[in-house]
Length: 142
Image (cartoon, one colour):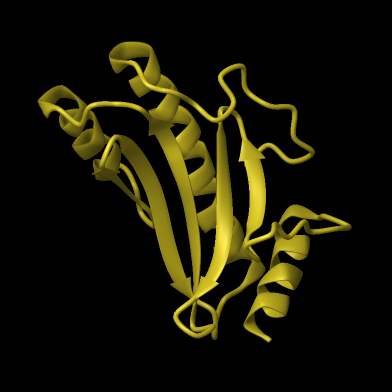
């Protein structure tokens, strides 16, 4: 039930006629150089928006400084290093979720992954999901 509720909110937030579900049950969305996903987690209680902003990067001091700088401007999401990847994620409770709130979370995660991933890959190396960007039906902006 939570997944169908989230799917309906996504349709409303981004004015989509159809919402794609991948093999893992997540909702994938391209955004510039990044791909972000929506997952219903914690037994249907939370929706999680997440993206690997860049992979194949060494999380050294300069990279972590950039991660900290990115976090300073975020309201709903966080950026963190794990292994050789930089991730962006945020969660909201499903119970009182509105299309506007979900849209804000998606925009923040997607645009942050695109912006931070592009900058880190250009300055410190690493790999982006879509190095040349993508032509998506929606461009991560509400």
